[in-house]
Image 1: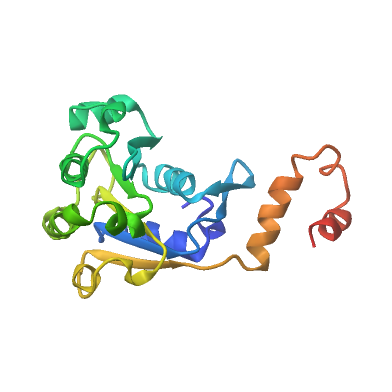
Image 2 (image 1 turned 180 degrees about the horizontal axis):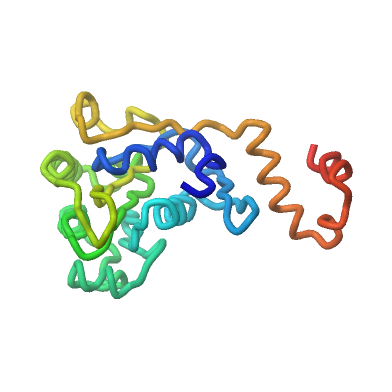
Amino acid sequence: MKDFDKLQKWAKEIIKFVPVKSQFTLYGNIYDVYPLYINGRHIPLPIKNFLGKLLTKYENYRLVVIYEPLFGFSIVEGMEEFFSSITGVSTSETKKISLNRAYEIIEKLVENTAVYTSVIINFASRLNDIAERDLQEFLYKMFRLSINTNPKLIDDNEPKYNSVIYLLDKENDLPAWYTLENPRIKNIAIPKPDSDIREKVARSLLYRIDGFIELSEDKQREIVN
């Protein structure tokens, strides 16, 4: 798989488990930027954009959307037409919808057999603060969906799930009954960047400064460090 070796460990885990896990929780350092190797250089991206590029580049996903409570669904990668044809609504019609309505849309996306799709649930650690009344029903339905859905075989690709990815502050921000011993969920910690990752991010930013690329490798390294 081209450039796979340049991915961070946690990103490799996502790619590795997409065929066998229907849902993921990513927790920890989720508000940082993450370098993804694109067209010969590392590009720092917010996590939603990183995941969108990762899944479309390495796993042939055609649609990656993000759901944010109070703001609804928006497209990260792919076409609005995919979303509307699968769900029957446009993303602009999903603002301020209830969690129960959000589940109905997520279920359609997860069960669709037209295009490989991933749904990112942003700020999932805050769900209890803004939708406490509906949260338990939503989580039960999402838990049930994680167990009952099956991998999809679309076009000439290998079978894999239309995935759901929760972005969490802490590992235990979802209730234990949801994640413990659930064979369809993969929990992945996002660590703080090490020196190598920080250097890649710094280089990608410095490349935008006039004259940096003309410097010698030693001088570039001196500036980065």
